Length: 452
Image (tube, rainbow, N blue to C red; front, side, top):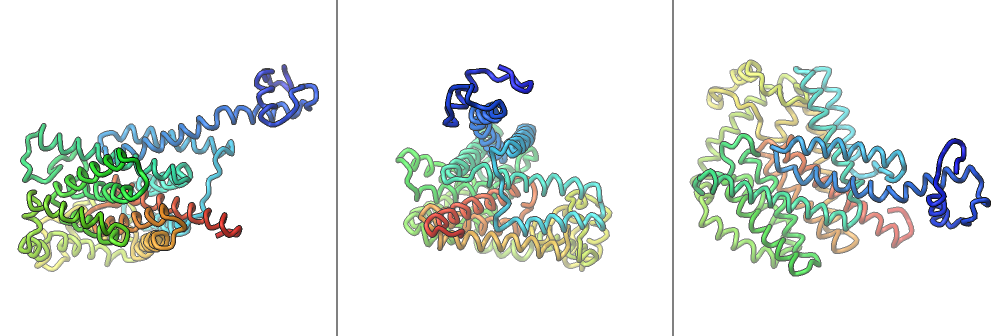
């Protein structure tokens, strides 16, 4: 049957009419309605599959975050999911929303990073990194909050993160200690440039361990609780195997924040962590004398002096958003020479090892202020959900996000976390916080009949 040049089968039209509650007698329907019914029927037939496909693609993107050697898979998943998201949005199968507490702060920070191109020392690299290390992360953020909108989706996202990081931790330890034959006294991942740096592994493992810890509180079957408990032990062991003080401090910080909700769990977990520390080489790096030596002679302090000299010359807009500017040996040597001899390094480090210094140097004090606005907003929103959420799930996961962002901040004070897998962890914390915020708002709207 043809109408206005469009062919629509009788079977498809009958199905559409049935779904739309119309009379199956085709002669009673105006020809102009056939096209609309056919389009609606196709959406009904394929829309759900496209949405599921989008969920799978975004899940794949997040799953492969800890695996740096599989960037091709991540790129395919990213561009495929973004394209499918645009298609579903155009077909009105998804109605994306920018309404969340972070939209304005993120937009302001993005605008300032773009404005910084005017004074950037390396415009080409800054332009590239604004796209690769800011715009793409923002796309991932909005994909997550629009593709995983429900409580069930949030549980699924948490499971993906836990499984992914657990597999990564297990494989890395197996490869590093068993296949390569390194002794347990060596830091996990040490001198493995093809993997995530040792000092950054803990950003992923601590975050996933906290998700495991809070998932144990929820109504899961016994098998689920066993899996979460096993993953928690594995991730804790991997965190301690890195022998990174910042990761250990982040783990303890997360547990302290979690104390109001996890008193019994922490009473059981803390002795276990201490037992692991006593029997693992990390105990040598946590002794009082080792900590005193580290504080008094940490190269990071010297590094921060060098980058402070750069900031003095570029206080407003910074040197540009590009990370490769740090690779300019002449630039670093110039400012390292200005550092008082007591703090001067023979060769300046090509990374600040502190997210505050990093942000300030690349975007100036204005950019740092805007970025801290984002961090404070995460803390405020997660804290409000943790203690004033509408139900147990929201309060529990809200506290998990509060513990996660506190842990991320602790590690970021000493490591490079604004690009790659650790930056995606920050995006995940923000996205999960927004999902919880929307769930809480919807519950309040339904209970009061007024917009929250």
